[in-house]
Image (cartoon, rainbow, N blue to C red; front, side):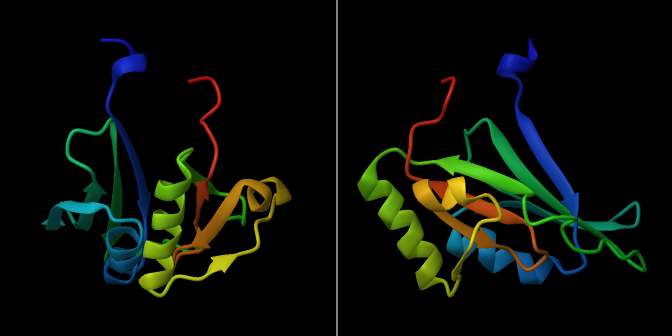
Length: 133
């Protein structure tokens, strides 16, 4: 297996798993794939879509401050070239109570909408084709 076909896990810490869950599950429509507690001192969530090539993991360690995103340009970008799918994704975020924020890089405002999770990390819903695919 090469890295070109490997499954990708994007993992990061948080101080509040329950605050992140509505953003990624209700807003972005991810499935809660797995939740664990007290695994070697960590609690966590894995979110994604069964059968996709990636999932997100968020972990919390008691008495450890994970802090907030280091910059406003820490992004996950989801390319949605179909206009109807893009508008539905934005409507789902807004319907879940998530408001778009101005992007640090104005490029993302021209081709999509940016949303900030409770930890300050940002997700862009881009209404364009992914480059290099």
